Length: 300
Image (cartoon, rainbow, N blue to C red; front, side, top):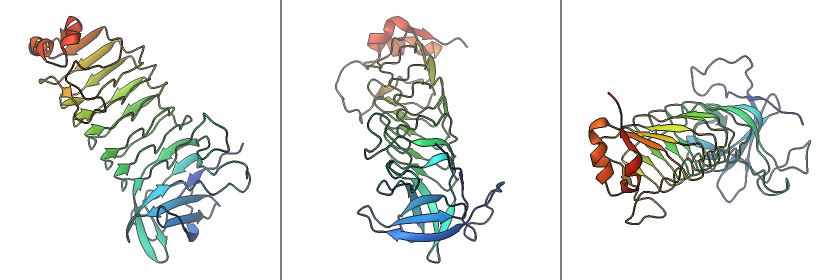
């Protein structure tokens, strides 16, 4: 199967676009009637295409229009393929639209069912996200098994539920603009071995890193205040957790399972490291009591 490379920039819209070895411009745009709003199909000079949903008179999000079919493979639902570099903006009918979000299911797929199903297997291998994007919506990169790495710009302040569920990511470094890691955001990333959370992380919701079989250790920065249920469920390799918060994180009020009981992290932890002078505080904290036998103070 041939993979197409999308390197796309709209000319004459946002100045100071980054230079690229190949610059391709929009040769045509067309609006498609859709229940989800005004969808624009942008066709570029190298015959590739990107779909956008107009959010306002000046902004848009990238989407995947699943009702269109690739002309060369009519039996397969249309998906983005290979390397994708998103534009900061594009021009449609004389108006400039800034790309501010990656929409729900934009690049997601589903390799669990027949190829003819609504969400065919994702063929995305890499993506470059412009600094105009502030949101990555729910399921945006769901089942992107060929996506092994991604750089999330500091402009992004929201990562949706299951945004990278079952993707091929091996390492994750989140920008300081992120404060909440939503439900199942990195769940089932079986190759994930390294996670670096910013000091701005305040809450990690249910199942955020569940079923990450290769994850062996994780450090929660001092800014973390709330933890969801079973955030490390079925993470058999996770033996060590470091929690640097002076105040023991409480159970998230956004938890689907919220109840007045001990925190259930869901991993076969052997050691939980906490600030050295806060060991007794952690052992006495309501949601940490069940882990008191493995709570150890960090050395200075």
